[in-house]
Length: 507
Image 1 (cartoon, rainbow, N blue to C red):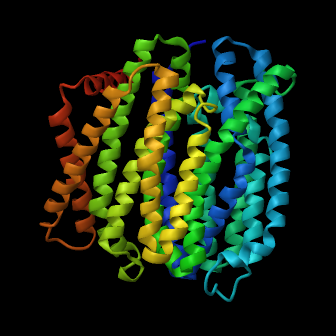
Image 2 (image 1 turned 135 degrees about the horizontal axis):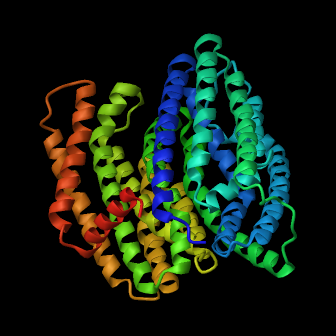
């Protein structure tokens, strides 16, 4: 079965965009209410425990990615029996994973206070907060969560997003009421636990209606089980690398600099995460379609599509980077006031981090769609270990600058060159020279856009929210115009135009 990749990607992106906007808006409002109603330290604790639980989520080992990838071929071949067998394996593994995460979470409980430098709000018990967050993480693996894989493999993220949107609206209304009227942080966290369970149950009910013939009822041959476990082992290093890079930065800030600095860091990182979430929506919407095409299309078509997809993503990354750079400080002044702001140089470093991270994510999307985890298994771990090592050294001397700069350098010097080499060696089996030159062109255009935009934004004389809005608009328009003027005759840009028009027309 050839999936309608253009139509599905368009539907997935549209539904995902609505969900993402609602989610980010609700999260932003909730975070703001926490800061102003309960105190900034609560926001810092929330970021810390989120990072700790991301580390515990390593126990998942990449089971989800491996099994969804394993479904691509049976879907193409309409092999329902094998899909049922994969579902059964997924159900068993996720049940075990939930138990293991809970056991490890309980075991590390005595170390929790040592990860917090300075004082915590006197009215709360950090252990209770930790355990509510732990349970909310554990239940994501229970209550039929394995049925999510069907929606992902069949490119029906739109169904998943619509369900999540409804649950998110319910969660937001209840949590906002608790924060505004009861000011009970424990009850606020408990809502997340219950809505996570509800989300899994609703998805299970919907998927049984859409795919009534696919149930966990068959047995996967031993050799195929072994192949999947090899993929899981390889994906684990990628997950480990991502967790060390993203979560340990937060933990190190908390341990070495305290909750106050963690709150400031988290505020900036939170905005970066919002932008990354938008880009992740594109990657997730396209990944299954890319995997389908990599199985069915000829090598030349695969490479042309890769260049077109990369151009679309790189243009969006450039717009996001310049808009972030010009708008972040005016936005922070409006949101949390000068007390919780960093100097402009920190904002510049965050912008560079955003650009570098998302440039790598484009390549990672193709790598994951092609399932080349084994050949790429050492890269994420080495990148993250280098980042962690530099973090521990530099945070003592240059503080927050060292944390961000370490991450940038580890991606720029190790991660991206290695990703490019693996992508072209194992997917396209060709020279990467053209792509490297295109990346350099896009990087120079992004840097020029940022510089021009900053100069123009310095001329803005209005104040308040108008400063923020005008800065973002100026940066976005300048970046788009510069890219169009410089690339409108380039092969990758022309291919991107036809790819976008094809998706709009449903082709």
